[in-house]
View (tube, rainbow, N blue to C red):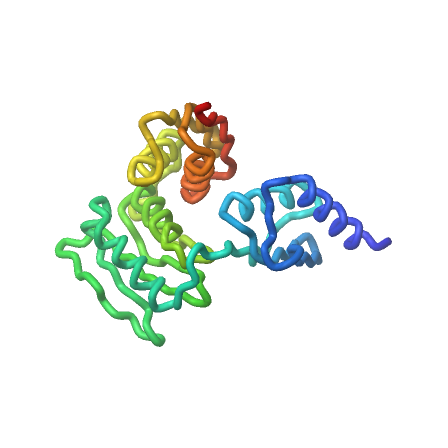
Length: 240
């Protein structure tokens, strides 16, 4: 057996060992060469995507990962509809009120809002259900929230958050915790007041009690959506 084949078999074994990875269109396709692992396919939710990447990254031979894993959309939508939903969500978000919002449409940038005294610019591109956010914002909180709003659009298959932060800002556990709390509070389907959020390193811990299993899963996905989160430990319990 070749060394590459052995590594691929070990990755497949790790993926099979994580029960929360649910491929939706067949097994995840893997290819490995020169330390780079390519992962391609579709999974049921963002938790499955992030956990699949985490499983693969544990192998010492895997130096980099080419991520082509996408999430099954909750509602199939055209790229144009996704783009419109994303920019509408950004326009309505208070913490992004001083950002200029622009869309890529047929290879051209169209300004949706020219913010007076703008503190940032967010450019939205959607291709095959994959949302890419480029530009610069004033802080990591704005970058994180913009990414979550893009993920919340039901047709989004993936979000590539390429927003820069000017001036540069050092990441922190408190910053991640604050954004996760704000996201949970904004999610109308989650009782945020009953959820305790803590962050150690880039690992978010959720504690508390929720009324339904669906809400437990929603809260975990909300935390996974936040840029900078490497792992979510969901210790929420469901009321009986």
